[in-house]
Image (cartoon, rainbow, N blue to C red; front, side, top):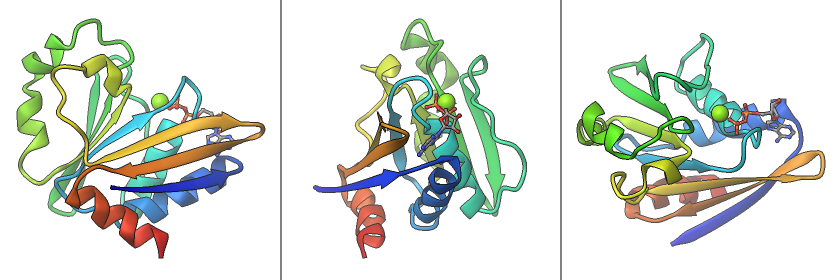
Length: 153
Ligand code: ADP
Ligand code: MG
């Protein structure tokens, strides 16, 4: 529905951009974070969480698949599905309950959950571009549009 592209150089700028994004994400949003290993998905997530008031560390939940963050009455679930062998594991985790209830869900490696995950509201693609990164945000729903519309201004 709407596409925004940004060129971002360096880790600090990536955290900063994540903060911008975190400040405008509506609750109930499902965000896919796509890009190769080392692209910057977790770095961006750190910025998003910072904007939402989380001050502690943010690590990729590589082995647990999901890390919950309690924020001011809401919960943000950060998924990393890189090591998930079978999308069925998401069913066992009760993924549908995570996706409802007005929480925020950020998913690294959503490809691994194909067939079980629903379409996201917002797709964030990160590509390595020289020393920096090219970040493409694509809103795919009205809720996603709330985020991209707020960013582009
Ligand atoms: P992913 O979660 O996609 O595997 P990470 O967020 O762990 O990747 O980041 C991998 C590396 O990329 C980190 O060393 C980080 O500092 C670096 N990085 C992140 N964003 C940028 C950027 N915009 N420009 C340059 N380096 C970046
Ligand atoms: Mg990661």
